Length: 530
Image (cartoon, rainbow, N blue to C red; front, side, top):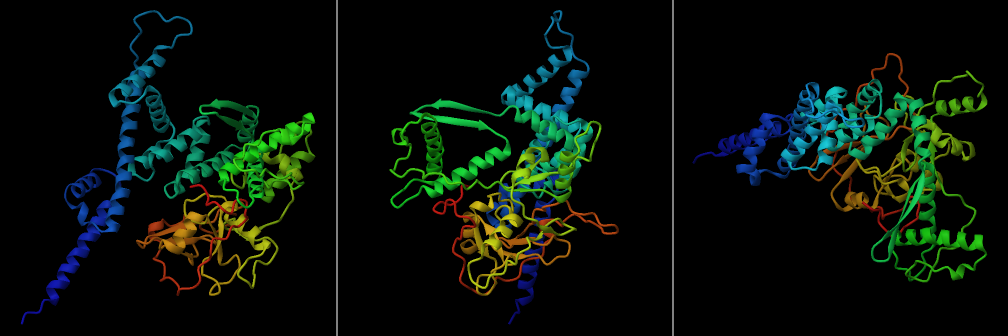
């Protein structure tokens, strides 16, 4: 008889080698080799790829799109440089107020590209302006786009944030955000950009905030079908105050038999607040003011409780503001304080929250020196029962800030609490609890996603490793509450890429999963908007 074990083993080894080679091709930097591999797979072998290979192909397609966009931008910048450096003189004499020959050449480039590419002149103008910014001031960002490390929406965010900055500040912001930008989604990158702009030019950030603050306004616009729109441009603290108040009023207005959605209750509460205010100011009976609610229940009378607006400020920033307030004599200058962070909004210059800092209720948080992450709020978070106490909830709200799934930015007030290791196999304390929006909470318990705490010394304390159903690992680092302290002699290496994280251990033995548990329960009947 013939033994086929050796032949079978050789075939398996060959298939494994081919899969490894294919993975190497599909994870390469964008360029001709990757384009050829993608073309071959789409033409012949797409159905033969396993799920892992198909996902690699999706990612390869995104990198190729970035590479193609970088090529278009470089070509647009070259055309712009040629036409504006040696513009054709206008056939007629320039009149006062008309564009110069260089400006006319710029417009001609925009129009030419719009016609050739079948895009609007508005879109072409944005593309040409970005091309000029990237080639002239942000070449490293353009190179990251060309290799596929960044996609076009991220590059747009960087360009939009730095356009109004001087060249040195723009480059400082670029240097601050580029190392982590490839691992972030666009909302996270925008937060990093906001923080980097404030850190690079704190005085300018305060000045720009004051300029924008003068533009605050409310606009009411009629809409078709008997509807209307209210649009408000407010300081961040004002926006969060309105949001917090509407959430609480909407939650309090729900009664048995009320089938309105959370959005509908918020909208009705918004109108009811002004109806009651108008009635009080004019002496009119509030019953005469029509309610917008589809159901009889109205928003209950408002109590004295103030809406919660949470701001996190490093101690050095706080003391800097105190010095500024104490010593305002002419000619006295102090180092400009660093960023503050508004929960549910992101980084803001300290001037944006100065009044709030003077009137708020303070809690002192201890942070890790090396990473700036939360260590404690002065109260034990251990609870011997399944339900955590308020001290634990406050700790988690400050530590996590948002849903603990990578890339999700749902604020903790719209999240559930979840035991990473299900209770009673895992304790009820901050060491085993995370905040998850309803969507990612369900994915964890029913979608095959697993989470564990990182054990790597290189990761900040509280880093989570999420493992997808395909076995891929993604890191979620905690957001620092204060700038990390640069310790002498300590090498601050950048975090390892997600692909380098070792695979998670097997899932723990089956135990009772957490039911969705809101951290704070303003709208418990509705899943968060996604």
